[in-house]
Image (cartoon, rainbow, N blue to C red):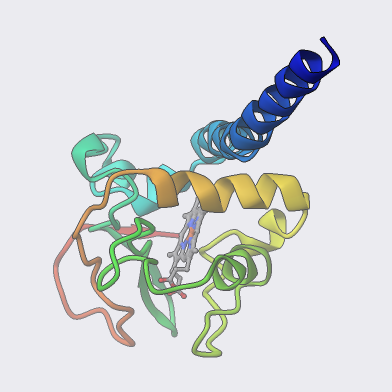
Length: 161
Ligand code: HEC
């Protein structure tokens, strides 16, 4: 009897141990989905987002509309999907957290203030982890947003402020 009970206990512990991390990861992604949705990341990081017609097949795949900052350059919301070449696939979670919270990119450049990192610096640890986990779990999109340019050279639609 005691043996049966301890076997049952061992089996239950194994199930809990296996299910534990998976559930936590699901919860983190779910929280990230909620936060990414309400904080408008897609407006600036999805093609068509700033035109009110986001291309959901390329969700967070990089904007094709830039922000022209007088005297500085044109900034496009880059691809946030886990694609290694065009997105954040080669960045560590810590590097993505740093960019979101402090505006510091792995190459040392500070992001333009178009990216609302001063506001996002107030995210809790749990919230920012969710925001990083959600796009990472989402479908890849190989959309390269135009690189920052020092002068406005194209006649592409621009958002000015
Ligand atoms: C108002 C527009 C806007 C919003 C809203 C916005 N971003 Fe950005 N984001 C940008 C722009 C523009 C850049 C590029 C700035 C630069 O290159 O200096 C950027 C850069 C980034 C980067 C660095 C990526 C890289 O390749 O350099 C990350 C990560 C990022 N944003 C994540 C987010 C997340 C997550 C959200 C939502 C919580 C968000 N952004 C909301 C405009 C925005």
